[in-house]
Length: 626
Image (cartoon, rainbow, N blue to C red; front, side):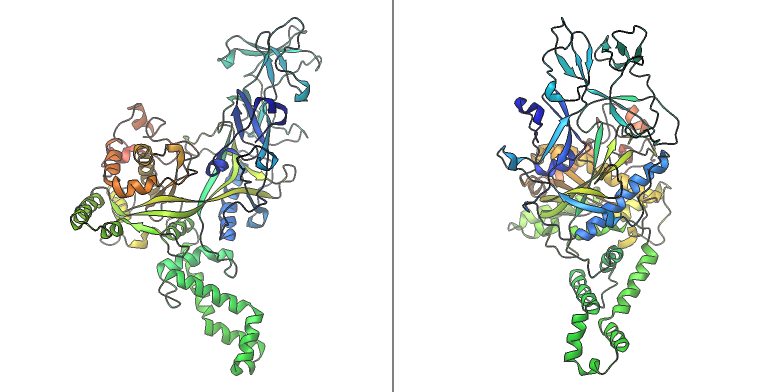
């Protein structure tokens, strides 16, 4: 990116492509050379440099549902006057690919533009406050006040309203005359409560920067934005990922399904393939998926029916209605639809999307992901003694760490999608907190359509499946979930979990805590720092996936899988029982920046659903996992 007004300072910002959705979206901040910029325009890929997305329809459905839930929840929580997004919202969402820049710095190598934000400056010597309308007419190297030899610096603070989500630059004008010169007095530069705006001419005109209230009105139109009472603005220090936080969703790409499968049926059909509900089509899920698609295409395609009529005299003798009935029976269309209806009734509110992502990662629906289970790695050993030792150690690992299976996937296509931005403070650590989520509107004045910025990329990862029967039995012993009906939970026991179920949230906490602990212990083994890794959680499958976001696939996770898997788990376990901020950390939530938190662009849940006490058993649990 480049800022036209400050090009002489070399104000370029570059990011590795997999990190782009976290940094280079319109509305986000970039800090370079002691100046903060806000991205004003992102260019789209017109040269097909991005990887293709196989199943765009499913991705649009997943992302639009996420956007609707986040935005409409905010509208209701803060009594905002904006209209909610009607559902289904798939037709209102479009996907935009990032333009991938080349190494050269010419116009073709730029991916977007940014502008100075906030456009507020203060003289470091006399406090003269300026909000220049045109930056090309403003020289920050020389104070505009006669006799002052100081220079300006950017005011690196904005103000934020916690009730309506408004973020704006610091500014003030004299009530007697808007053209009067203003002074920003900073008795202690690093102590915001000592900052005051003053009129240089009117001695009585001054304002504490912490005293101004938000009137909940749109500045450009003065139309009200919220029904809540006025509150004082909160000052926020400018930093990347602080004032404006991107919301990025990562998904597995799977082979195309839509059309001919209706988008409302896709998730249920995929689940049905896993549960064996379509074995009458084929025993193999990927083959059944292809066959069902072909049957539906044939049934809905008039040209296909014409071919059948011409080649089959029995069809030619029937009228149009009878032909459709006979064709439906031959293709088992009614049977397929009946299975789908049954699945919808049973799993309508369950979290099956993440389960299907997990199944796609396992290769159930095709797509060619070459997953390598650890037992396959052991079987490939030429040295029988080494293979026997590995088998013994892996059996011990599975027993001690409640492992069901561990697989390495050396080539998987993931899609990171920025679906919107959270304005202001994100109090993810507060139960029930609702962030000020704003979609990426196509036009801010006409909130009818929105988009997501998507980046598909190929990477490697390790899929760790925990023994969900042991997890649920543990939670049952803690009296947190009901006892299992039989001797143990069956394999698909978690498929009908709902996100709001207490059991779902408890399983998610266990998975998330283990995942974070392992990522924090991975640096020495993978050669990748925490910023270069990512996570996907599958509570409905009792699994999580740690993958690389590195621009260059180093094979670091593959090395861990083959050479230091056992010590990785041992190190993870040894580091869970203490924290620098104990006993406060373990008593309050069992997670903080010192022990479990990861950078927000690494964590898929903004560092929520974390608790080390599941491994300590001292406060919220009577016993412990592992």
